[in-house]
Length: 219
Image (cartoon, rainbow, N blue to C red; front, top):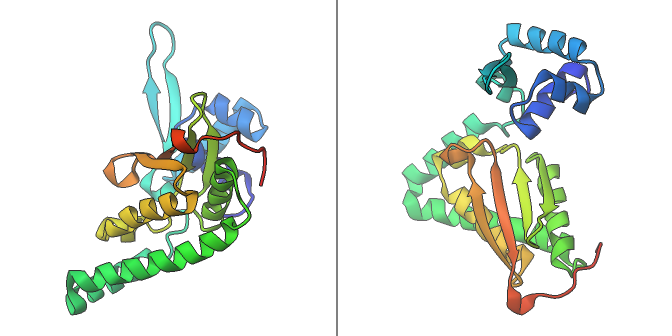
């Protein structure tokens, strides 16, 4: 996407979910009036929609979100062609052939990720590197360290979502990849899942007690 105001607005809604015009204006450094004008234009184009949330007395709070058309403005890695290929593999080689294809992709991804993680000794550094890698691949990833010492990896976009919907083996494989590259010092579990009604995919990364050690602040 470009860096035009409308694209930045769509990106903010994609990354952070439904928001008010005032919150979007603060995030993007503009006035609420200008933001409402932008939202009205995008609404007319079918890219955003709103819900009025009533909290007690007074005017309801209007929250804006992306429509399906708005989500479609983000890359999907030629999803239609990918789905056709997956179906062809399953038809010709059966489920075992599809499993072998996913396993091959998993090995290739692990090789790339492993090379990038080679000098990342701490779990903190590995989580940060993983989020960076995923962002480069179009997942709009970020991470945070939580008060309980765990980490949260957030993926606001899934460029292979349609392919994953056709074959959920990809989602199982990605969870295995995360566990492998983060190492035995972490337990990884998925908490939100796009394919099960979530707005995004999130992963909780919990350090194993037997591997606990003071974390460095960088690689």
